[in-house]
Image (cartoon, rainbow, N blue to C red; front, side, top):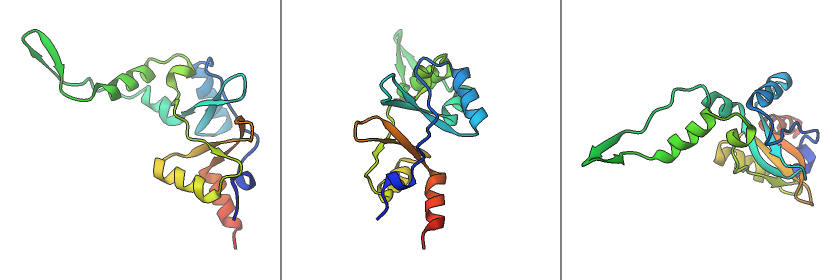
Length: 152
């Protein structure tokens, strides 16, 4: 059985939460990648920024519908999604753009586990934590395809 450590990329491009949105866009474009882990000064993963997060900044926001009843406003839909999109659309810093619920795996986890997470959660990259809980690598869909191509 192969483990994540066997297939992960160890030289991980990262950004800090105080980087600007323009900085992260340049990092993605210059490195021809579609996302990066966001780390703190202790190299702990605190989020992920993807090209999708940048694209959301440029989409037309759909304001939730509401009803005005006796001078009170009642929203007729879920405003949480709108609030999240508005935050991303107006983000200047990575901390406001990133997804803070980054899904991570450990070096010793199975390749099957990381593949299952990617499919089930519809994600393209998974940061890998070392035994200290710090960023040790990353597994992307491309890493999985390369691994599969080497299997008998």
